[in-house]
Each structure stands twice: as structure tokens, then as C-alpha cells.
Image 1 (cartoon, helix red, strand yellow):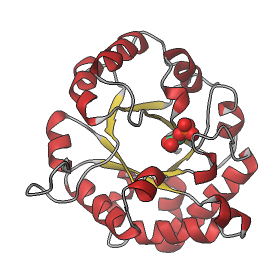
Image 2 (tube, rainbow, N blue to C red; image 1 turned 90 degrees about the horizontal axis):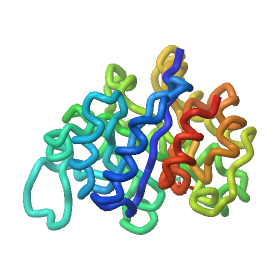
Image 3 (cartoon, rainbow, N blue to C red; image 1 turned 45 degrees about the vertical axis):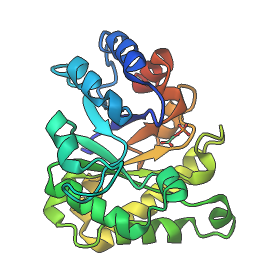
Image 4 (cartoon, rainbow, N blue to C red; image 1 turned 90 degrees about the vertical axis):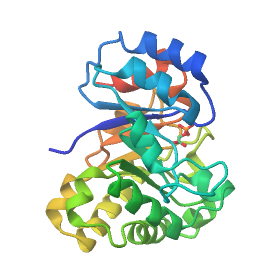
Length: 249
Ligand code: PGA
């Protein structure tokens, strides 16, 4: 049985005050669906979130990291520093980082390897642009991204990785992929994992959908056989909306 995981990607929102207000409310709401929940605040709110989430079973993730332990990299935060705070997950290769901060498949791979080496669990994001989808390249683009991100990744580590399929054209746009479109690409990603490793690993891999997923469309997406969760942006900024997403059943 694959784990179902809903993760909140707060992006550059939710400073310490708002993080505290949100989480102090959220931790009292029952999780009735039984899915795992991960909250990914910005760096400066991680410690605040850690203090509130300790002992609740709700997990903590960061949104990015650097792949070198320490050194002259002004403005960067290393995987080791995140680990020290008690962060368990880290989003790697989000399309906004690829688009605005020049992340490449190669740096994404370095980050995946360094995160795992330091005991952090990557939430690896892949997804095609609108032009790529219109060219019929969604399968090709996402499976290439997966192949490059998983270079040199030890099969034993695969259980510590979550994949998030996020079509770029659906992020923050209010346009969701249809559940069928999302499931088709995710299924193809699972086939790619099978080719790289084996069927058991592919069947065990949690693969989320992300891109305008919200309290209204979550059920239909989650009911698809290959969709194991969601990476939620805008709808995760509101406690009521986010708890409805988590309690989608
Ligand atoms: P969205 O963001 O839910 O606002 O589309 C999802 C994401 O970028 O992870």
C-alpha cells in the first residue's frame, strides 16, 4: 500500500506570526482521512513551525536547500542546517526554482543526492510547460526530468523520495489538469521508475499531483489510481481550505 501524502507549499508566504497563527489552529483539527501531512514554510518560519508541530505527527519540510555542506555561498541554506532544525522533507526542483533561479536537471540531481546523504527526504518536482504539453511532449519531458534527477540514486533510498507531478501551466493559474491528464502522466512516471529500478519500487513510490489542487477538486484527483497525494500552494494558505483538502474523503 502506497502512502498518501498531502504537502503544503507555502512558497514566499507565511512569516513567523502567520505560521504560528495557522499551525496553532491547524493542529487541533482532526485528520479524518489518515493521509500524511507535511507543512513546508519559508526558511525563517521553520523553527516556529518545528516548535508547534513537535509531537503532533504533522511533518515539517523546507522549500529548497543547497547541495554543499557549508562555505562561501551567500544567501544559501544547506541541507545540514535544515536537518539541524529537525526538518524531515525538502522540496527540490520546483518549477518556480527552475524558472526564476536557474535550477537545472543537474543541480536538481545534486540536491536530491545531498538531501538523501543528509537524511532529508526529497519531494522532487517535475512537470511540463504549456508549449511542451501542446507539442505532445508531457510524457517525454517528465520522464527525462525523472531520469536526470535519479542519476546515481541508490535504490535503497527510493522509499525516502516523494515525486510531485506539477504541470507548470496549472500552477497558481486556477487551471487544474483533468484527473485523467494528471493520472496519465503520473502513470507514465511510474513506468519510468520501473524501467530505471523495478516494479516493486515503482509501485511503492508516492507520486503527488500539484497545480491548483484545492478543496473542490481534491477528491476527484485523489480517486485516480496513480495519484497518491497533492502538493498544495494557494489552497494551503487558508486553514479551512487546507483542512478540507486533507480531509477529502
Ligand atoms: P498552486 O501551487 O496549488 O497554487 O497551484 C502548487 C505548487 O506550486 O506547488
